[in-house]
Length: 351
Image (tube, rainbow, N blue to C red):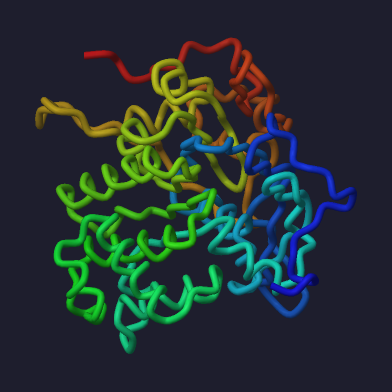
């Protein structure tokens, strides 16, 4: 790697060992809708991921969670967007001003991302082994033989049978669940410190979902990689993550330890999401709960609290006029609600 490609802090000082691995502050992302107009899709987002920690970024489609994760990876420009404000610090370095070459060097050895529908992320013209080996050669500088050996090791790590044979096969020969394992192998091949998983189980059946979740748990235990898990499914979060960051209409509306968020939510939207989780024993005479209405599109957020027009607890003259800040409720817990301390919200019940 050339000297110009190396990430160097201005003062060349080591990172603070107590600081989070990933620190996102006041992140604002915009997309162009016309020749001149920019629309804000993510507004003032803040969250942390500590080294080795598992954090869930939760919300409905359109909440801004995927856009936030793409901004962390420096990929918003590839989708027509831009980071309009805030900072994304990884290991003490602000990434928002990095040149494209340094971003490419960071992806792989520093952080990696797996996406929904893995078959669309794999090149059908190359074997899965070649695709894993390409990343290893690019970031670790291994020769062709060593890189292919590493590809076999990674397929074995993600529990693909007959890895030495299947490394020569093309993506079409793998099922959806196996393709997702290949993607995880590709991302983990360069030993990243942060793994971002964007709805990695959405297109898979329930049985395969559980195997992928168990695989992610095992990889965390074996490698110590930090995990940012992007999902709309709070049921999945309960099995995998220690902390939950809930997003709505481009903002973080609640942040806290997973158990606290599940049992004592501090925002009506979080409570509504929890109530909508299907539970065993639900009978046909009891309808599944749902949050009324739908999430507003970017650029169409209401005045005041973004959630007030869907909220059963909204107060006229307050929630529809005043935009709430993300406020610490207790140590380690925050909510963006003007009435947070005046409500008793329903969480999940122990059974």
